[in-house]
Every structure is written in C-alpha cells, then in structure tokens.
Image (cartoon, rainbow, N blue to C red; front, side, top):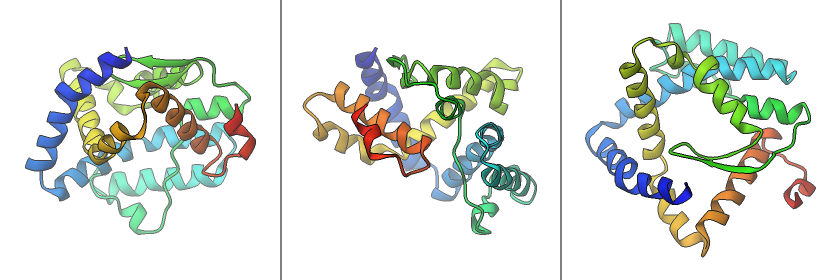
Length: 198
C-alpha cells in the first residue's frame, strides 16, 4: 500500500499539484486553502470541547462565525488577521487525551499514514464532522475532496524533495514522522520527552 501511494503521488497528485500552483494565482489558491480550513473549524470546535479545551473551543467558534460571515464563507481568513489563533483538533487527538494508545501503524490507500486510533478520526472526518460529507451529489463531493487533496499536496511540493533524500528507508521515515507529528498535535506542540521513546 505504501508503494501504491508513492506511485499514486508521483503519477497523479504531484502533476496535478504542480499544475495547480502554476496556473492558479496565489490569491485564488489562498482562498481555496482558507475555505477548506474554515470548513474544518466545526471539527476543531467539537474536539476542543471533548478535550476540555474551552479557550480553544471559543477561538474555533469565533473563527467559524467570523470567517463564514465576514470572510465570505471562509474564502478570506479575517479571524487570523484579527489575532484569533487556529487550533487543529480531531477525533484521534481526543481519543489520545482520553487515554487510548496509538495502536498499530496503518497505511491507507491514497490517504496515507494512520494508526489504529486515528482510523476512527478519519471515519468521523469523512462522514460526520466534515461539511463536504453532507453534499448529496457524489460527483461534487469527491471533486471537492480531490481539490482539497491537490491544494494540500501543492503546499508540500518542496518537502517531497527533502523526503527523498532524508532516509534510506522511506517507509520507516514516513512512519516515524507521522508518529512524531501526531504527538506534537496531541500535546499542542510540547510533547513530553519520554513520549519519543514509545
């Protein structure tokens, strides 16, 4: 599956991402990024509440309200310009705060790295907490998901060149990078040192 994802990335995602960066002006790409970030604020709000992070929940609600109204459905990120910080939270992080362990490392076709715990977060993301999941027209829904994927991939084009030189074993490097990133998210950027030994 890891090899399949690499091939899919090289054959489809990277060419689309390069074309996206080349042909769409930066302000338009920024509007697309802002739109999808705003769509995720409901998930951030819910999971902040479930984790007891009331300050983050207030920020997420404020961001969602401001950007959805004054920001033209999230196309303009007025909340960040106003000093409201974005807090990325998901079900996987919530389960971690509740005491659930990582579980096994899993590589999902097209989506990429995950863990036994974070699989639940992916399910809820696509079917419950993501507004795009409620679009009835499946063609429109998958087109929006693909646009989100291409937009995300376009922002990591430079990183992929570093990834290629970073490790003799790209699978191991991807796994360790994933777990370290998740720890960083779970502990809001300050994970205990002993967690890196797990």
